[in-house]
Image (cartoon, rainbow, N blue to C red; front, side, top):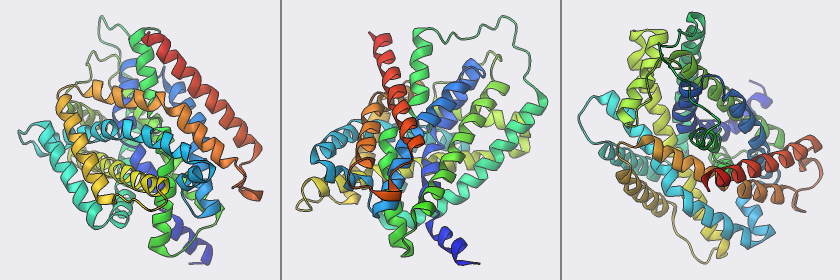
Length: 412
């Protein structure tokens, strides 16, 4: 093994963790719903969201590659007002987002175990395990888990959609009426779909924190090229899987007359049914374990990301004079998430839509913060983003702002 390969393997990790975070609600739930309800109509929206959000996630990894620090430290250098703004945004979203991903994981676990137990108690078990794992092992356990789970789900999902394409889309049932995208409900779902596609923009800061953890774990500081390659691998996987999940929903459920359930366990059963109808009943247990493992990894990643973020924000705002430890943050977020879940039992779609819409509404501001930092005097020379990326970022700001305004117009 030559030095280049060895060094890249030391770098590889944050991008996979990022992919593990993304391949959760946005893919298993929202992309599947998009295909099941609208066929391939929303494919362009999924591609556009992944394209126009790309610069702002790349900027976070680029900043860490250039400085060895997270972009949160960059916020502090530009002005503490940015940290306050971002901190408030994080507090607004962290309980709702954590609740949404854990609720879906709880539904999959309930379906897998086949044990009669309220979804909120499955959620409590998952949150408790997350706290134990993160409190004891933190990054190392997270990194190893996600590499295995992502590969299993990637292979099984690609297999399912290839078989579904080979079979062809079945004829719609008699009397089937397609849902209208050009309606209030359709436009609100469109915003919700793009809100977490591939994930919320405000979560872009997490890749830098994970990169820092990876450097501490391996003792190797990667080059900018290695950092960006790791990120681009993770981002490409998430974009591809978003298209695949939408295709699976469109090929298997669109026109079937079956409405995706609002109950988390029932939805989990429908999701797994799409795989087994394509691959075969023998695949049920493998897919069930992979799907739950994916959502569990998303739950633990989200909890970890918010915990690290809040710990760093407090430290930077108060110049290290005040500290609230990582374990306290993840415990607080877990309790808050459980309380939110208890208010949305048997209403999966409303909770997911709430989380994704809130994320999309604050996306233009989160994107602007990253744009401002990466083009600050802190980044010079080869570390400055190329012109094409700057232009794409400007187009992304217009895209995110325009759809946010459309959402408020529809809402009013």
